[in-house]
Image (cartoon, rainbow, N blue to C red):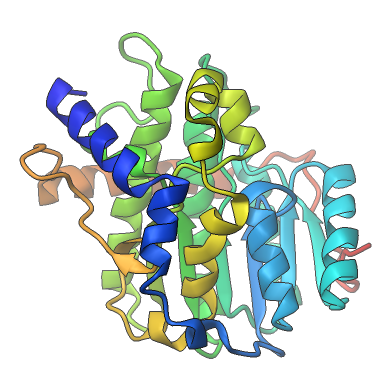
Length: 337
């Protein structure tokens, strides 16, 4: 990361990514955009038991949507579901236990879901992680990449046929403004070269999500794809992964509801569906996916190389699933509590 990118990004963040940035942007929001009922529409949200995912699940449940919470920790997921049902009055909230860092588990879940449910209107790729030491999952894949990039890729690709059959289908991926300091690297997807920096690996993964969204939008015109930055938000994940940043920003951080606002707007509003597919959003507005003069654009060759490597890894997972993994869904009964 160059000093220029770092400086421009931070100054931009102080102005736009904080609580004050949200409050300023929200003055231009159209309240009627979210004056909708989504009864009968189904929404899948990964990482839905805490932070931005939980706030989004709560907002969608209050509008009547059927919510599929994809979570790793059953106890936390069950607690979150009970809270969402209690506060929304909506019992159409289901829990699916999936570890997004275990790619074969993600694939098996998505295949089972596709067979069991007749439709899925909106997929929200929210789950993410920032592991500050290089760790591998059970298949030998670097854990940040497995969760933030390959898991998102496998889940989305597997569910695209189901989304295509559904009315007004949308896919929203929660990225990060940190990706603005990263140029796509197609030659080291699992961070095996040089020193390991968890923050920069996470930012690279978030750049990869933007590239994937742009590619999906080109290839699947029936589905509306978007990727967004929630701003600097006060979540447990930020507190744990970036404690110094969390302490430094303090009350300037956004609430989880503010961080989730654009996710909810992209998922629910008619206005969002009228925007061009494949764009990067911040506070309900499409914004550039690159800083000016930051040299973070990639060539078509680099993008194709990245996509080819990603698909090769995904095919390996699909052709050799872990025999001990069991489907997260019963073939006859929805898994809920």
